[in-house]
Image 1 (cartoon, rainbow, N blue to C red):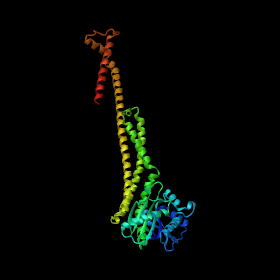
Image 2 (tube, rainbow, N blue to C red):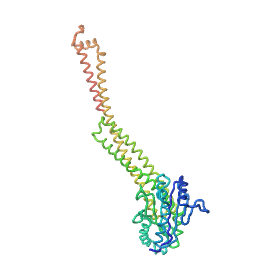
Image 3 (cartoon, helix red, strand yellow):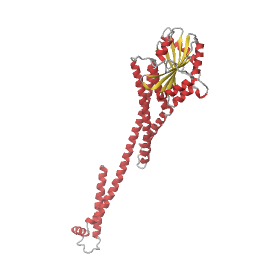
Image 4 (cartoon, one colour):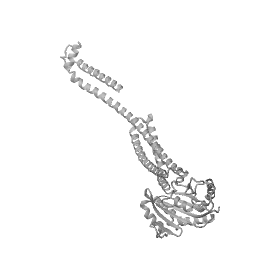
Length: 430
């Protein structure tokens, strides 16, 4: 394939606004870029240009675009030119000054949302129709692998879309390896004579069509990567499983014993608190992702809702990530609901045990009260009179007589039995 010319390598950094000065200073010094006399936010040395600009509608992000051009035509020249440009852009010097390493450092320090690498060229022969782009792509993919064999891309494009008269293919993105990959890789090809149009309208500068959705996607990848880097989802699932298992165990008949309940309740309370904390973090990331989805949708609507495969693909990526987090939150809520049910069962069992214990104590106290009160009510004289009424004794003149004492004891037993029977009946009705 010899009908390509003008290779361009474009590196776009999406920088946290607060760190723009530090990142820009490093790039200018490392790449030895003098300032452009006609602009305060551009630097240039030969074919290497650095352009810094704010993104409309995003006050927390600055885009830094590093572009390199080669005038030669032909595949071999395109490969050699891109390799030279790639070496200049990503391998400035040996050691800590390598830009590719510096990008990772910036990202790890929350200075960078991510970056996009675009391989671009202009065709010297026009394509017959849109379907013929597939043949061009099939020839270009092996060439890109030759340019940078260390950066493997997908064997087939993840998505593609017509862009400013040319064609744009998404070759790689961070979701393929969230923990290690912070870059998005595109291939952009322009028809003959449309190279500048594709560059300026499609991918370069604040007005380029790709800039806003690309920035939104990098912020979304950043949020997903933040979850993945700390194994937050795996830890969250462990908390959910542990709380669910504990709830099931507590609802089993063996565990619903009052003697075993207090330590189980303490453990469940701690597990629930841990899960609620993790759920708050997951939900916070979900809300932030939802905001990025809203931003993407707003940008899409502003264009008149003209759908393209790339737009649909990226919107679906964010929506899928949001849905996965929503399902995680639902799992957590289900586990917490199960724990509440288990706690209610245990608390009910404990309350029953306590009520039963209180009833037994109350019965004995009632009997004791009756026993103690009986001698006060049925005094010796009263007992003698009562026995005399029934003809059991004629008089209690002899204080040593045993029968009145037996009468008092019999009254105690009778009244105590009545009290016991009454409290038993009340307990059963409760």
